Length: 203
Image 1 (tube, rainbow, N blue to C red):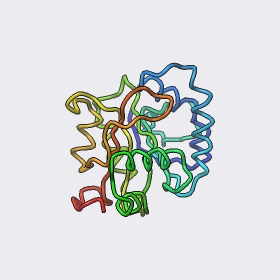
Image 2 (image 1 turned 45 degrees about the vertical axis):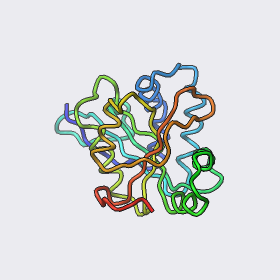
Image 3 (image 1 turned 120 degrees about the vertical axis):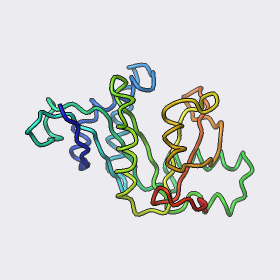
Image 4 (image 1 turned 60 degrees about the vertical axis):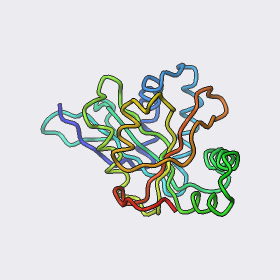
C-alpha cells in the first residue's frame, strides 16, 4: 500500500498519539512503562504555539489518507513547536550552553526565534525507506522561524541514520554530550538555519 505524507491538525495528532508513542518507544528502545507519561506530554505539546506535525500514513491504493482512520497505520511522524522561555527543553539546553561556556549574548541569539523539532521517528520495520528525510523536509518547509533545533542521542562517530540525515541536510553542532534528566545517555543538540540548505551560520 502507498505511503502519503500528511499534515496533522492538533486534534488529529492527539487522536493518534498512542500509536505514535508506541513507534517512539520501539524506535528509541525505551520501556513501555513510559507510555502514559509520554502521551500526556505530547498532548500538552499539541497546544503549544506554532505546533506542527506531519505523519507518513499507509493507506489502500485508490483511497485518500485519512488521519482519523485507525486502520490506516502511521509509519513515521514528526512534530514540533515554537521554542521559548519556560519550556522544559529550552531550559535544559540553555543550562547546557551555559555549562559549555557559550557567552550569554550567543545563548540568547541561539534560542531566539526557533522551532524545536521535538520528535521524529520511523517505525523500525520501515526504516531505510527515506521516510525520515521526507518527514523532515516537508515539516521544515512549512516553518516561519529562523532556525530549527533538535536533540539526538550521541553515537560513536555519528554512525547512524539520524546523524547521517541531519548532516546531509546541513545541521551543525550547538552543544554536544549533554544529559537530559531521566535519561542516562548523552545527547547532541543540532541546529540549522531555515530554510534547510541555507548554509549560513546559525546566528
